[in-house]
Length: 94
Image (tube, rainbow, N blue to C red; front, side, top):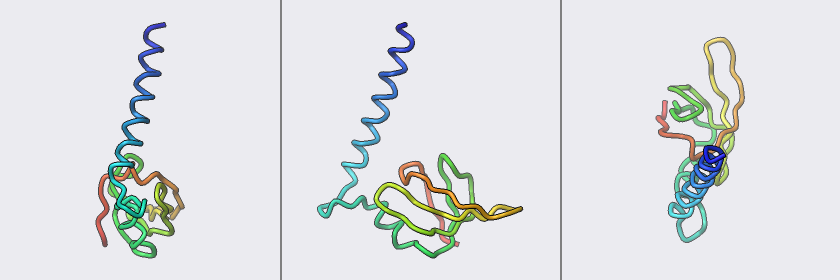
């Protein structure tokens, strides 16, 4: 039973750390600076690395404070994906 309690506490701690990072990154207007930069990339092609991506060529469709909608250009076909901004490690403009 102790093992399950530890897992629950780790999940809670991870969520709190994520919230804290978002709050620390906000400017006076309440927008996260990363999301502000990503909003400027709407319509542009880029390469994204992160938890859900590995060197994936994408076109940014839309973005808000927490989420980004991209079309991923795979070798066989294109598909649309919606991911959290905090899972992105870096973005390179093509």
